Length: 284
Length: 315
Image 1 (cartoon, rainbow over the protein chains, first blue to last red):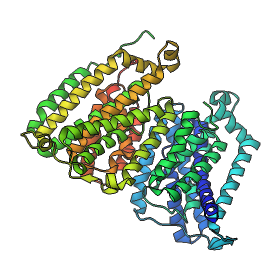
Image 2 (cartoon, rainbow over the protein chains, first blue to last red; image 1 turned 120 degrees about the vertical axis):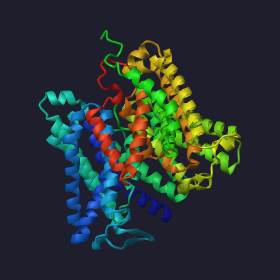
Image 3 (cartoon, rainbow over the protein chains, first blue to last red; image 1 turned 90 degrees about the vertical axis):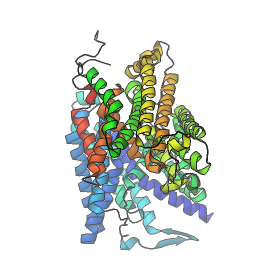
Image 4 (tube, each protein chain N blue to C red; image 1 turned 60 degrees about the horizontal axis):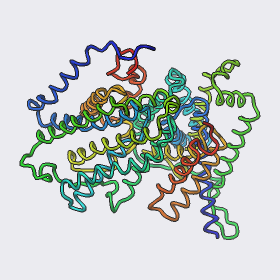
């Protein structure tokens, strides 16, 4: 029983990170119809930048802030300078992001080298809590709570503000949204940058446990894709449900049948696709 | 709208003829190193053409296509080393592994289109890579499988050296090109293009678009497997890098750079990428950086591919 509970909490921790990463991917897809191959690179860049800043300044908070700003800026420039020209050409946009993904992958290897590292856990969150025989690290719990707060924040932003209304309008019908006076192009830039920042945040939050290593970008990308495919592309609710499903299955899969961990992860995706090709909450 | 035949491409036929002549007689004057490079180009040209069937003609962007290539190569590798199978068993085994895999995965992917197709094939490609990487007893994991016999000795041919292998690859390329050319100009191929342009209309005309997409996927996988079999014999070695995302994206670039839905374009694209990769490796280890830049430049300035430059009208 304790074992199951701890595994479930671990699964929720994976789900929290996956949600942070996949929500940015699904938002960008919803607004721009873009399959962003460079999304895993944003996670990687985030954790690398945070690492550089924290080793210099010993402030995780500063590192996180700088990582978010830098990666958001990278995303913004990518959208404004390169992707914008190919609006409504999903294949060209995908290939563009593919080019960037390969570029970032090698550039990161060049700048930071191939050695893996982890970010330091904030001193306040060291150690584990222990309730009735269940031992669980404080930091993991903290990540779950933060991701939940981010989720609530995104939902409020999306459902309760003018910006959110504009985003939703653009997701539904970009042309009509533009006709009502929404600057779809600038909105896309903003959403893409925000998605990049969310990915970087996911990377930094996972930093003390998963750390950073060469190749993490392409390791994480399929996970984020599976989450988004299961949940339905463009849907925040879908990203949440997809993240929980994938986080749980991944975690139990690794614990119970480690050899098949890759298989167990993709099985639910195949089932969902067979039953509902657009994902649980996606629209065609 | 009446325009149907592409115009503005008088330079293309001479280029194809010159290319064919070069591929036939050129190697006699080249050093073994360049024959090796040409062999790589020829084998990867088969692979690039196979993706062109899907990407260019059917409009299905597969990002996991290197999977079939790699799995067929593993088929040859495992059969010929672990099981000491004979030449024909290894070749047939490699091909069949790839084709059966395509037939299975096709069931999953054939009802999705566009970006969904892209994401799902990417995810499936990663599964295949994961299997090759983690199923260590069978695949040797990261170390791969080495010691695949040389094709000439395995097949019991009385010849050796790079030149016979090159001409054999060229023969396979020629056969595959003719088959694929016939396929895309057949009524079946025209239906595929119809689906690419307007699936709903094809459906209302009574075509079973699912079956067409499925068959296109399987046939494309079969040709990719043929390339994989040749590649296993060429290198004598198989490793997970054959089917990772980088391999699939290199392949995707070969087709896009060369020109989708042309068959000739991907051959040139494969040649260009192999050449660039080997030339660059003399100067820098940063191949992915270069590849990324080539990707971006291609999309910015030649999104229809080199073979379609200056061409007007639909194919």
